[in-house]
Length: 194
Image 1 (cartoon, rainbow, N blue to C red):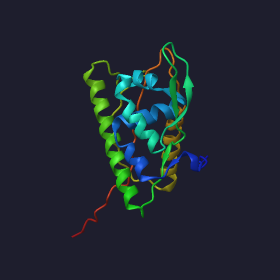
Image 2 (image 1 turned 45 degrees about the vertical axis):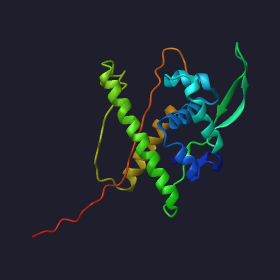
Image 3 (image 1 turned 90 degrees about the horizontal axis):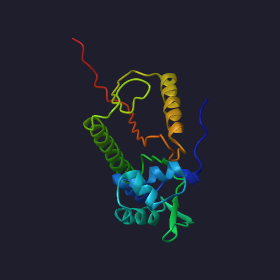
Image 4 (image 1 turned 135 degrees about the vertical axis):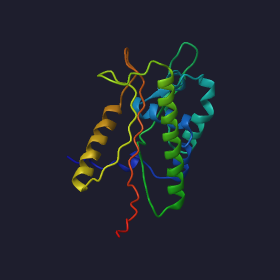
C-alpha cells in the first residue's frame, strides 16, 4: 500500500534550511525534535551528551531558517524553559534547482559521515550488539538489479522502518538509536564484447 504524499507543511523546500542541517549537531537536534515532538534545550542536550549552553547557537540557527519553531515554555525549578518543535520531516529534491541539489549533497555527506562515526564509536565501545534480537549495531552495503516492483517493495520496507522511528519519546529501558540509510542507482558502464 503506497503511503500518502507528505503535506507541504512537512517538506523542507528551501536551500538555506537544508544547509542548516548539514551540521551534524543541527541535524541531530532536528531529528530529536521531529521524533519526540516538543522538547526543551535541556532535553536535547541530555540526549546528545552535551551541555545545553553548547546548543543555543544551533537552535537559534534552526529557528532563524524555519526548521524549528518555538512553541511555548515549560515551567522548571529555575525558570521557564523554551520548548521547540518541527513538522519538517522530508527534503524536497528538485534536480533543476542547482542550489538545492548542492545543499542536499552537503547534508547527505554530513549525515552519512556522522553515521559512520557513530557506528565506529559503537564498535569501539565494546558494548555493540551485532547479532540476535537485541542487535543495536548494523553495517551493510548491498548491490542488486531491482525491477520497478522490487524497488517499490524496498521503498515500502524503508517507509516501515522510518515509521518505527517516528514519534518515539524517551522512556525507561529504551536506547537512543540512530539509523541512516542511503540508497541510490549505480552507474553502469557498458561492457564491449569481443
